[in-house]
Image 1 (cartoon, rainbow, N blue to C red):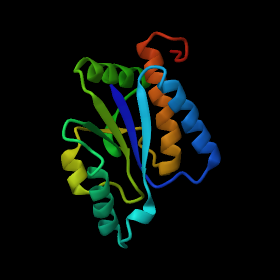
Image 2 (image 1 turned 90 degrees about the vertical axis):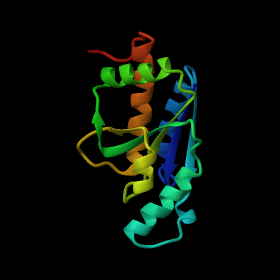
Image 3 (image 1 turned 90 degrees about the horizontal axis):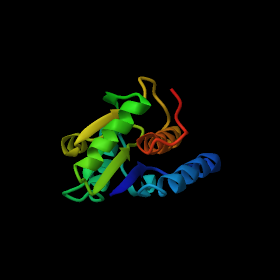
Length: 156
């Protein structure tokens, strides 16, 4: 199985890039994970609705028909770390080959992406910058793998 974290826009902070790279390396111990970035410069439109639609088009081009797509969205389902690990393990048991987690741009997701998504996941009821979400999610993904493998990282 492979996990793809599909992101809109580069991360400006070297510190956040380093944190994400560290967790990606750790996650690759369990499964293949990669980050795919859609550059903001590729959008080339103005207005919130048009930006969402253009980002949606660019994102959809990166998704194959058999991919399992999860939007990181404030309207998504919230999990504890253990519940998220159980959810992921359930997906693994379904023999899904590629899970794509998507972090959208500043205006959220297009209607087309909402229709294509298999699930929506919320990290919190609070709003975070898309850059911080990357670091938080990478850590939670790593935590989920350690929970699944009964390793001493997560404490309850």
